[in-house]
Image (cartoon, rainbow, N blue to C red):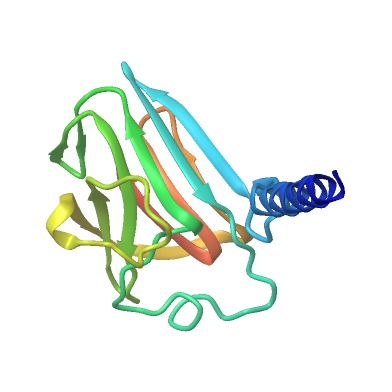
Length: 175
């Protein structure tokens, strides 16, 4: 009988450790240093939703350092940013089919590449594969009218998507 009690106690201990580990693993995403954020807007008859991790500047140099020039960036923090549209649209004049995409960029000082990738659920850009790109467009960054401590996306009712962070603004048009 003592042997069974020891086995039961051992199993309960293992179960408690596993459950405790799971609760740490499944912690609330809102407690992350870069919490999840989402913006949605209806443009004409199309619903657009962008979901992203929202990092802060925290006194760091962003462009060319924290976010290197010439490299694919998840354009947020944690999981890759996602871009979802309920109907086919034109992005900067090019067709993008209805669906959910991984949203990436390649920032540079004078021009950014905006990327819609067919693999929406990725961690960062570590397994990004350009062969899965559905669409790439180029746009020009500009100095923003105000400082943005947190990375922020906006979508205007007329379809202008803005990426705002630090002293930079990058816009592209959805029709």
